[in-house]
Each structure stands twice: as C-alpha cells, then as structure tokens.
Length: 59
Image (cartoon, rainbow, N blue to C red; front, side, top):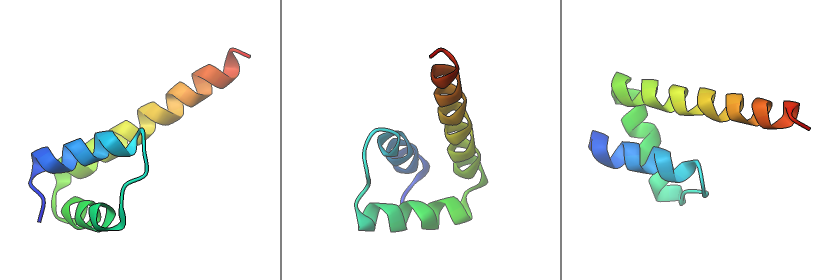
C-alpha cells in the first residue's frame, strides 16, 4: 500500500505521463482509503481542466 507522499508523487507524475498498471492500481486503492489524497486528485483534475479551457479560449 502507498503512503500519502508516494500517492501525491504518482498523482503528479500522472499529470505528465501514463502510469503503469501496478502504479494505477496502488494509487486507486490508496485514493479509496484516503480522503486527503482523493481531494488532492480532484483539485489537480480541476486545475488541469481550467488550464486547458484557458489555453483553448486564447486561440
């Protein structure tokens, strides 16, 4: 099982590259059990979508 530091590192990596199957499974398991990391994951997704919209609206 991952600790929160490892999970946050994987969440960050996932923003730039695809994670391996084992990493995705371990991360999903951690996110099911940890509300803090689940919140971080949602925040990262929200920021990513907002940045994409901002970039797309500038064209």
